[in-house]
Length: 169
Image: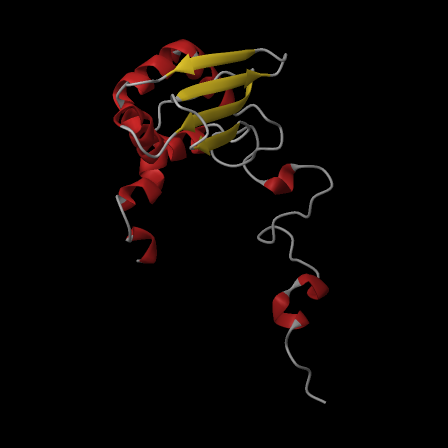
């Protein structure tokens, strides 16, 4: 498998991306990270980017994530809110785990809010749903739809057997 080549190929698996715990608040539109590729006090943010940035992007598809390399003497994270405010987070000389815990505390949604949203998302009272566990067992009970072929046979022009079969001339 070609996607399992490179440094730490586990980062490219769907299970790894789903395991991310950083779900940003809805007000955050842009999440920018500034760091240098050299220097010991930048090592924590480099490790954070290596291990957690893909999870952050996967869990927050509506947030723009930007990384700036070699543009600042000290590493920091800046969050831009939809009302125009910004939040500056200093990550100088912190480990990737300290950065992760601080982001969870400051810019992430609470566990209770995440549970509420997941319950709302899986609600099945949508009238367009049909099947097992829904109000309609089959699409044929909706007015205007073709009835089930088991009850009323389909017209010949809608059957592939007659439509695609070559006629003997």
